[in-house]
Image 1 (cartoon, rainbow, N blue to C red):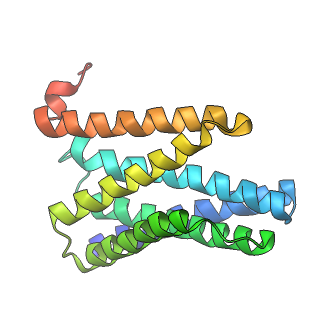
Image 2 (tube, rainbow, N blue to C red):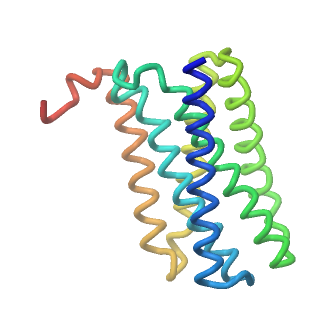
Length: 187
């Protein structure tokens, strides 16, 4: 089935790139606490990029994806799954447990993403469930970036991630309200 092939290719491609980012980071920085921290940061950034494609694509270019909207969700889920494994490994190497608030907010995000991926693979995800999960995940990404702003070594990343996240939300709202054809500045 062609649809399943695109789902598998999307998942394999995004997971493969995230795994490659991890491997390159660990080779360059070393497999110590610092290397795993960098790998967690870089896989999170790649995951955020794949998320933005899944979040904006169907709303901003409807009909131009050739029915591949599900592949975008599965690709993001695969990339974020690799990030989750890297993040857990970092915490194990560091020997720390994140704050309960991070576990709760992140846990809800990962469970929601797992549910969305499962329903997407079954072909039974409804529009409101997908929108609710994607909006929640965007809020988690933006919150994560906002919390980086006070950190001197993460300030630029925090500001950039926050601005991009908020802009993505506005773009999705505008595209949903007016349609992409009316929003486009250039034909």
